[in-house]
Image 1 (tube, rainbow, N blue to C red):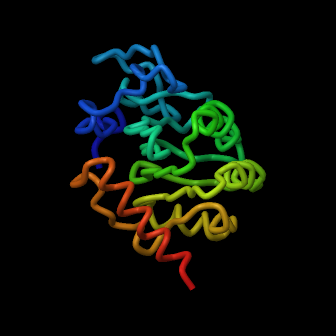
Image 2 (cartoon, one colour):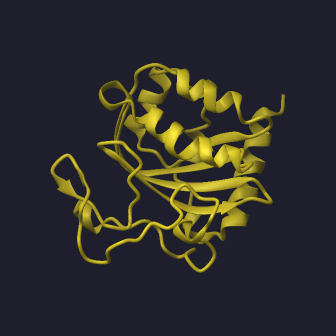
Length: 192
């Protein structure tokens, strides 16, 4: 695995969407250094392109947000720690609520760079899920031990993960293709 500061957010869709340029994004107007690392997960510096949203250990990048199709693709980095840092509260209050207000109801969370997950309560997950109407939250490519923690925390009621959502080659697709494939998989899961 590369050093933390070498892990960049996926950039092949930047010609399609940049959250800092989107007036409806919670990160509108942000500027980024190309060379100076100012954020860290514990004492490991991270690449300056990741977005800080209030958590001490979890960072993200909105890779795509389509207001017509009502979906967002969010890549995550770090440790998701609800137990010590209440990361889900920061994530929900400082990012997701703004996106829900803009009509986004389908969330694809990319978790390849989530090193650990520590659960606490499920209140924010439930609130997020309850505000989706006919939407969903899918977790792609989270590590096995993180998925195990999701299961132990009983988050499978709110989040779709594991199975066909593991080992998913999302980088080979355009954002709308990814959304369509994920939506199809979710619909198949819901069918009796």
